[in-house]
Length: 115
Image (tube, rainbow, N blue to C red):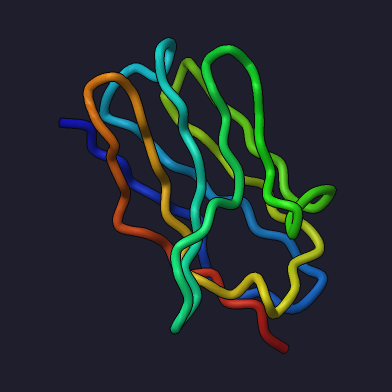
């Protein structure tokens, strides 16, 4: 069983920045894909960004150029740096870990972009 714990959410004004972090209870060194998803009220959960252990990354069109995903293999964490935040980015952000053994989710962290 993989445990994921997110942190870093909060309230920020439009144009501001936040950095989300997700700590995994297992090594993230190989054989997995980690990502961030979000779910706004009344909407389906959607992929924001993902990173695989082969070094590849993937971004949703709506965050390209604004968000950056990164891994810290020493700390077994994945981070999402979010810049130029917009009210439309308001959602609960979930960390995801997927490997041959299963698909795991964190509990989520709230991000609210409002003036």
